[in-house]
Structure formats: structure tokens, C-alpha cells
Image (cartoon, rainbow, N blue to C red):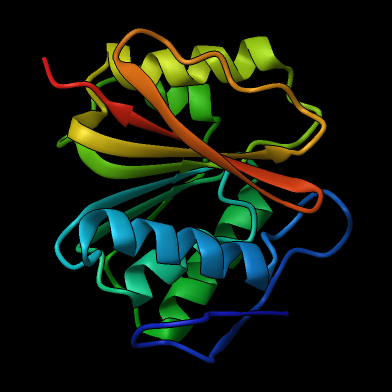
Length: 188
């Protein structure tokens, strides 16, 4: 079990998928991530949040709990996506949109509206070329609002993501075996 750290659902627990296929972001890293996000934007209230490779859904549901107006969680495994939807319902988040499809499939078409924050936590074995392709699709298909923040969580042993034109590296923060990479969508 994982818990929501802050916001309206703070302290509530959510179910996580069984087995080693998903690797929920630790409470420590989630707390640091949301502290950085709120430092960047002041508040998530009213923002559009996209959680790619959602896994347990903890990041997207945390964003909802902290006031994000729209939260979309993309998870390719149907059972895991159903678990995320169950978690969202148990928290009272009727606005969380859970999409059961591959990230590349979802990003291949333009969204209804651009997102202010995008979080990617791909499986550690996903190669850098595939990750770079997903980042390029975010830019190419207008998934990012002007000045949007993109955060990539990877193993600390992984190299820095290859940022496509349209994303400007901001910073990185390491937390033991986990590194968060931040980039900002450049304005046109």
C-alpha cells in the first residue's frame, strides 16, 4: 500500500499492483517532487497534469489531491489501469482520466488541451531511445502548454534523457537510487 501525502486526500492509502512489474515512487521522492512543483507554480490548483507510465497512479492521484483540475494517467497494463481507476474512485476523484494504452500510442495524437505538468516514470529497462521518442512526441503533438514543466524519473544509473527541441533542461535532483530530471517547454 502507498499513501497520498498531501492535499484533500492526504494520508489516505491506495492499492498498488502486486509483483515487481511496477515500482511506486517512494514517499520521500514524491514529497520532494511535489515540493518542487509547488515551488515552481505556487499551486497545482487549476492546472492540467499528465502522468505517463502511471504504474500505481500515486503521482497523478497526488496531483489531483493537491488541486490539479485535470489529471490524466496513462498505463499500458489493463489490470493496473483498472486498479488506478478503482483508487481514483475510492478517493472521490471523478475527474481523473485513466487511459489504458501505451504511452507512444496516446502521444501519437494531439490532446484535447495542452498540459501544464507532465510526469514520466518509465520502467527502468525502457531504453533511452524509446524515452527520447516519447519526449519528442510530447513536443511534436502539442501536449505541452507554453512554459510547461516536464519531469522524468529514472534510475540514478541511467543517463540524462535526450531532450528534444522545444524542451530545455532545467535541473536534476538525485535521491539515492532515483533521479528526477526537470525540463521546461520553451515558448514558441
